[in-house]
Image (cartoon, rainbow, N blue to C red; front, top):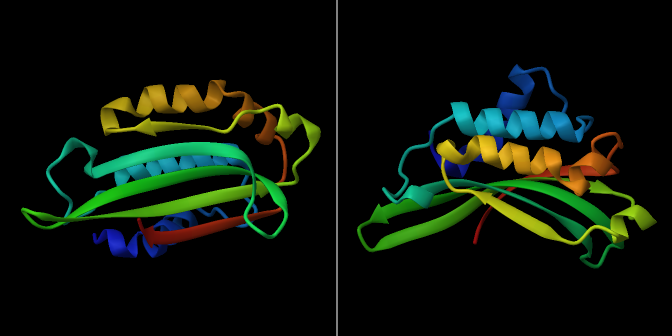
Length: 150
């Protein structure tokens, strides 16, 4: 599978698992995104260990449309075009929440999973985090899935 099609592949993965991307909760998001990472392999990546990684990140941000608390999972790919030509791209899924006072008490943070071998510690980090434990029971304002080159 080609990482350039990862957004469509992930949306199809959600559909096959009968999950509505606009109405999923954070526990479903973490579960689906990690299962997607575990089960769907992509072609054309560099041989480096960090060719296919996961990132979790959160924080309160205002990107010009008002302040939101964001909980994001990203899958980062390093595509190899040749020995000296690599390109980094990312598939991201963000859930946005109304920024209440409790979110202002949470520092922005991020954590990388550099290989499938680290998936257990990655999910343990997420489930133990203050951010996850606040948002897991909340309905997001909106969600967004996108693919981009970085």
